[in-house]
Image 1: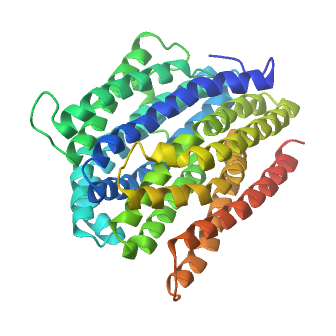
Image 2: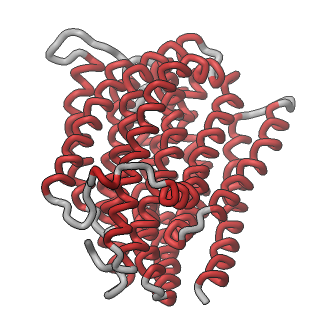
Length: 444
């Protein structure tokens, strides 16, 4: 356990953010490695994997419900020096992870075909997407166990073990991807199905290693059979905090699905370009996201310890660091984006579409950093509903104008990206207002 209620606020945020950044980069590399090899299979394969990969936002939303609630309750318990409560929360988190993971595994195989047929009209894109997801669904199911354990450690101020385990998993994925996708050494290429399977095997190893860490090395929180019985009071609190934050990602899943539906008439080229540009944008976001993801534990411990001035300092200093980083990343995306995209596709039309998306959407970066920071602060305070309302406002402001644009003569795909920039800017202003309001209520 690491006490975040003493010492330099900025130092705590940065020290926690560095391993988180490495861990997030590792997760991003999962997808980039897959995209590199899948991109060589053609734009239909690339479009199929990207469209199928959007379902990860749905699972991310569900896992964030668990993760955010776990971090918030454990960090606040640590701030109060209540180890027993921290252990109760951790064991309930593990129980939920097992149950929901099983549901995702079963539900994924039952509904994957219907999902892809909803967001794409291209038969080859759908076929590749289904093939990819059949191998990738176990990865989605295992996310919950990994999130439960990683969130428990983050709540206690520990992030390095998670980083090491994630690094191990990406090395395994990098090794397996060319073997399974392209058939290196085996002469039996599996195509996009191999990409999904490589990721699933890699995360299975990560879960096993992390579980072993908790049994052998972790002392502050641990798995106890007596605490694995359902405790509905803790489950209710955990879900109450986590649901709105997870709801942000669930709304993001619907947001992305709507975009795929809006651009499906532009063909596989548009879907491949949008998907590739989105993945690269997510990779560029990693440094700023890491700072925002470090914030809940720092704020949670100080809020639990009633050190309210440090709570405000943590938020405003992180907001400044994230905004400066996002300004640099905006410049990088605009000036170097085309060069980066060229690593993943040689199709000139896909490259042009992806770069056009990235050039426009780069103006989202600073407002997005503000939104991430606000969400992190609200998670630490244990009230994530304002962040959910903020995301819901963006979805509402985007959907109606977007469908109206799609019905107009001369409708162009760039209009969707410009509309997205405008709605993210509005959302960032709403998020700031809601955080300041929460501070006035809770930090008296």
